[in-house]
Length: 126
Image (tube, rainbow, N blue to C red; front, top):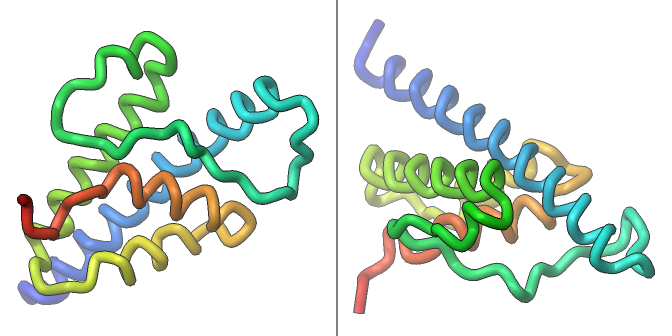
């Protein structure tokens, strides 16, 4: 197997892992959103204005409220770092869209989760 084939297979595996994690996070977010907002109807757009952008620090408060979702978001952040390290010149936004659209029915939710999880990765730090 060539180096390029191996990298392509590894990238596909990592993207599949991101897809699986996003499915878990979005399912949890939808349940919590529906419980907190009884007037919200499935199929309507979702905007989580309370979500904080992720950092590399341990989110103890998040673990207390949503341990599974918080752990999944942390792993999504690690995946983002790995993808950026493997392809530092790739446009990260295009990759976010590609992964978010792996589940077209929830692409909007997934894009928001990825944007928050990958906040600052691949961008110059102030």
